[in-house]
Image 1 (cartoon, rainbow, N blue to C red):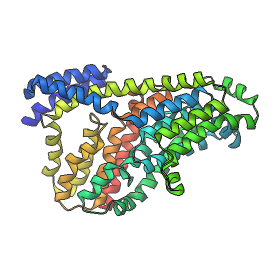
Image 2: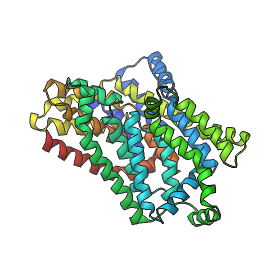
Image 3: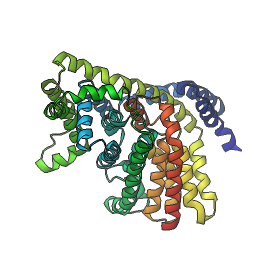
Image 4: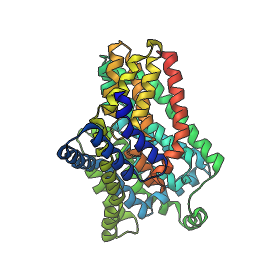
Length: 417
C-alpha cells in the first residue's frame, strides 16, 4: 500500500508529460503531491529546489562544447565540412550519417559521457541529413551504450564493483555488446537516410551556394569544425601521446575560436558573440532540468524509487535479471540526468545473488537506454538543440526504437547469463 501511495506523484508527472504539459508544470504538481504525502518540511524542500539547479548548472563541459559548436556552425565551418564529405562520398550521404553515429559512439566511449560530444556531432549530422528520426535515435543509442560500458564512466565502475570485478576486465567483457549495438545503430542511421532522403532545410539552396566554392576553400573553412571534433573525440588520447594535458574543454574552445577567426569569414567580435549566443540554449535547458529534478528528488524522499527497485527481489530468480533491467529502464525515465543514481538502487539486489558482472552491465545499458527517452537527460536536450527540434519530439521519435533496443538487450541477457 505504501508504494501505491508514494508512486502517485510520479504517475501524475508522467501522465502530464505524455499529455504534452510543460515539464516544469508537471514537476511542480508532482513535487507538491510529494510534499503533502511525505510531510516534507518546506525548508528542506526549498533547499532541494536550489540544490537541483546548482547541481545542473555545474555541468560545465556540455556548456563549453555547445557554445563552441554553435560558433563554428555560424561561421559556416560545419556546412563546409559536410559539403566536402558529400563530394568525397559522391552523394552517398547515408554512409556519412553512419560514420557520424560511430564517431559519436567512439567519443562517448572514450570520454565516459555523451552530451558534450553530442553538442558537436549533432549539428554535423543535422547539416548533413536533417532531423531524420533514425539518425537521432542511432546517436542516442550509441551514447547510452557508450557511457554505460566505458571504462571511464561512473556507471561502469558501479557495475564492476557490484560484481567484485576489475573495471577494465568488466569493460572488456562488455565490449562485444558495445560494438554490436554501435554497428546496429550505424546501420539504422544509414537505413533512415535511404528510407526518408535528406531532410535538411533549404538543402538545394545550400548546395548551390557551396558548389561555387573550391575544395580548397571548403577545406580551409572546415578546419575549425574538424579541429573541434578531433579535440572532443581524441583529446585524451592526444594528451597521452604527447605526454602533457594540452587538450581540455578550455583549450578546445580557445583553439577553435582562434581557428574560426583566422580561417572563416567571422571577425573577432562576431566570433565572440557567436560563442556567447551558443551557450544560451544549453544554459536555459540545464536551468529547467535542474528545477524539474528538484521535484523528482522530493519524490525520492518518499522512498519511491527504492521501493520500485526492491520489486526485483520479489520475483523468481530465473527472471530477476530481465525484471531488474525493465525496472532500471523505467526509473531512468523520470530521473534520466543521473543514471548512476539509478544503478545504486538496482545493483545491490543483483550483487546479493552473486550474478556476474555482465548482468550488472546489461542493467547499466538498460538504464542508459531509459535515459534517452527522459525529458531531463542532457544528451536528449543536446540532440534537440543540434537537430533544432523540441525535446518531446526527440523522445517520441526515440521511443519505438529504444524499446526495440531494450527488448533485444533483454533477449541477449537471457541467453548469455
